[in-house]
Image 1 (spheres, rainbow, N blue to C red):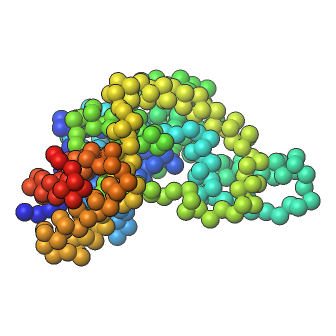
Image 2 (image 1 turned 180 degrees about the horizontal axis):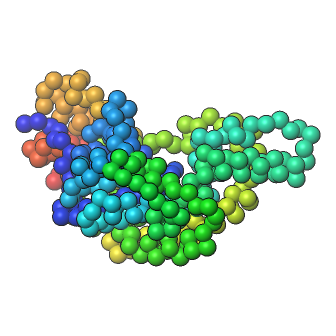
Image 3 (image 1 turned 30 degrees about the vertical axis):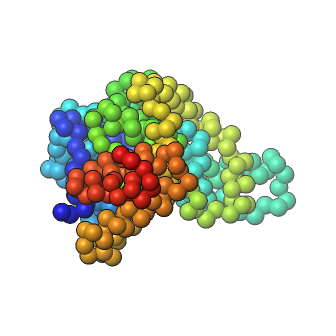
Length: 367
């Protein structure tokens, strides 16, 4: 018996095109999909390990030719791509997107990665002066490194249908192709994006991540999409080094930022309504969410567990210890947590049974 199996989830006869939007839990989703689907998750850009962590030692997958050669039924194609890319690959695709309140999304990204843009001295300025300077900094940022993120969700959804011009071949970089320019704020952007929105089957909302994942599981009849090697806190804004002063100055620009992402904000209302309907249709309960939150409270397992322990017995014992620690103080959920963990597709069935029985015994519970 080997305790862990290689990732083996698939979508069966389906395949999904997952368009990532910036600062919408994309890194967390990469971790979850790579650790559950393995090679069936074709990630454009940086590759990920079976444990759900970036593999910067591997070459990126970027070109249309590479994606065509690796794409397969039952798999997921993901990355910072736009609608229309999937038609270049061929086949019938379910469309997935992640999304977040636009003002929070952009604010999070600016604070996390671009706070230095708001680092300036102006102690002699009044409120109006500070606001004017902050807006100037914002507009430079949005015209430069973030030029593709203003109303970015709408642009990705509208995709190549709204591009002023598109030119590509088999060696084209799909990420670059997806960042097509718009010469002006297209009057039809919202209408085209909303039309595309009707085709979306899966909505991944970071503030309701576990509900999003359970929706996917129910749609495709999948085991739990969890990663016991991760706490799912990938690339959080707290990792940024913005100073209190930088954050304060950035806040002066928020009214202008709200204007700049107006189309995304309008589309966000439609996305929220669709997501709420999905959660209602699948009757996802607060208890189901609480179980998943408990499992990922901390990373349950260290991915070096296979290096630390040489036998199945040692590995199973270590896993049972971790589960018993996790379940302390969670008496009402403990049994459900044990069963949910041992439903993970990465466990050998015999190992899962052994872990479940031992954990229940340690916790004084019965099957």
